[in-house]
Image (cartoon, rainbow, N blue to C red):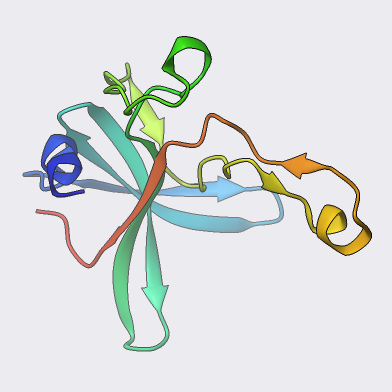
Amino acid sequence: IRVLLMNLNLLVANPQETTMSYPGNMEEKTVVIQTKLGQLRGAVKHSVLNDRDYYAFQGIPYGKPPLGELRFKAPRPFGGWEGIRDALVDGNDPLQPSFASMAFEVVETEGSEDCLYLNIYTNEVL
């Protein structure tokens, strides 16, 4: 993970905070940062436990999806993206038995093989 965090390089000189509006008059403060892989838009959240703001960057890819010839191999670097990538929601869950499968002995799975994502929470970006 240390190597991954160095590759993402979340510490930036000038993060840009904005506010996004959603239907129903909901608003969320966001921040855009520059990483080695490209720009990320994360959320500015507030902790009620210590009454402080923190930054959440969710669903950040750290490897190419392990599909086809990449299945059961070590993760390959993701490579980056163009423009600003939203990092506001979790990435895909890995394949796993569904709740119904465990409760009713039905063979069903949920999730995706495309599941190489990180969520990063930090109290500051520089």
